[in-house]
Length: 98
Image (cartoon, rainbow, N blue to C red; front, side, top):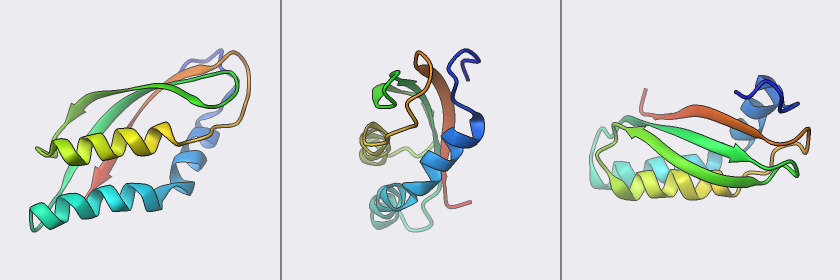
């Protein structure tokens, strides 16, 4: 995480956790297509100074399901982080079925 952002790791984690229902919907899409679905989508997210998501890049994915990867990216774009500092660049994984 960009240390000059003003956002703490706790704030980033809390924001992501508060939106777990959206990520669950992504998991359900994968589980419908593949019984026993599991995997991880690693993301790099640019957060603006206002707390909105400026961009999302999927760095790696083990889901083998582009629909799930796109769903995760779309859900992250909806997140609203605390408005602090000059923005931030963070990376984190979303794990399914573990």
